[in-house]
Image (cartoon, rainbow, N blue to C red):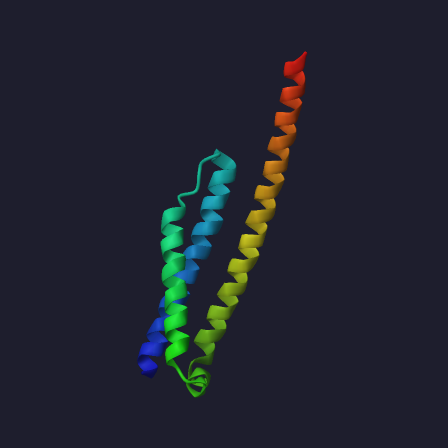
Length: 113
């Protein structure tokens, strides 16, 4: 069971790294090229990641966690990075949206004249 737990943790870590890399790369491309993000693959990865987390930690007893502490710590660190990246992306998108709204408001004002 311990080997399976380790394998599942490694899968979670791999998915987390892929999501993080994809989020940062595609978000930068979207900002630079004004393209839409392809979110379907990200959603699939995230769903699989969530499923593995539930499966992994529901099956194990807490005594087994100490044996895999380095992997668990890496997973937690990646979760923190994902949260930070998500917050950054949200802030940039919010700022972009506000700029677009201001531009639209100015355009509508000019159209009146």
